Image 1: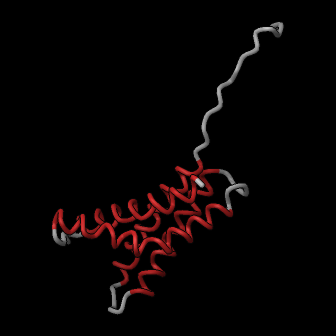
Image 2: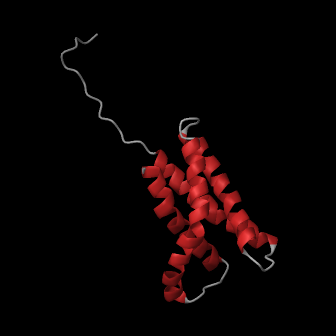
Image 3: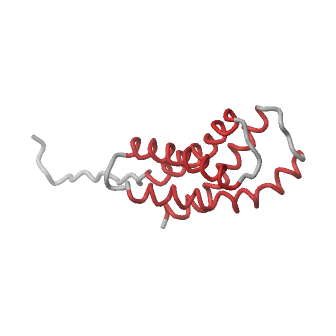
Amino acid sequence: MKRFLLFLLLGPAVGFTAFEIRELLSGKVIGGFPGFIMGLPFAYWFGLIPSLIMWGEDWFLEDKMGLWPKVLTSAITGYVVSIAMLLIWTSVPIPLPQILTFGLVGASQGLVCSWLSGIKPKRDVVRRTDQPKA
């Protein structure tokens, strides 16, 4: 349940933040702070399907590999899924460099959510005092 909520609630927010950083670095600021606030609901709307795909991949690989290989595969899945969704949803031609950098939005989303879902709580090590020391 923790994994599902992370990918569903935090995933689009992380992707939107990465998208805004990408836009700022390229010199495109649309609407300033009000544009940022108004863009957040759209980020959840358009980021829902990629988040669910990344959640499914992360859930499937949970017991099959370690944390860091799983995080890497989630980042790669996020990269590919975000590019695929961009190409499916857009109706205007987009230059290849913009398409490839847009993949970083999904990659960051998959990386952060997979990493956070893979963190296990530390168990306290209880020392038994009744055992003789060797």
